[in-house]
Image (cartoon, rainbow, N blue to C red):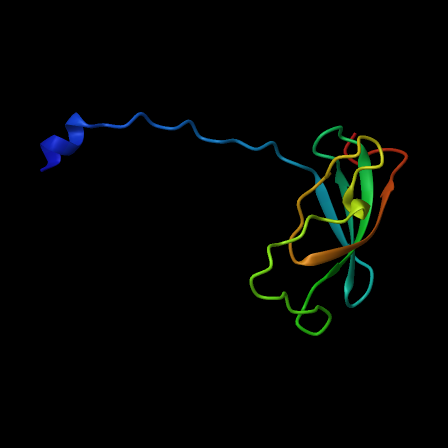
Length: 103
């Protein structure tokens, strides 16, 4: 049986590598966080104010409804694309910083 499997070997798919992204997280309140990061597309330094969603502060998703796209608030002010992928949080604001803390 192992001989048959070896005869039909499938080409290996190349591994997908994703670029690393700078990120610092600061506690601003019990529910809020301040994320300092660089846009993954244009490397613009950004300050993103988010609230992590918990059962106490979020609405349940309706069944049979697909996930909605992220709001326009979650666009880089420089290039207009999504700067970072975030799950389980609501973006309150996004601002461009004058300089990057990583340079």
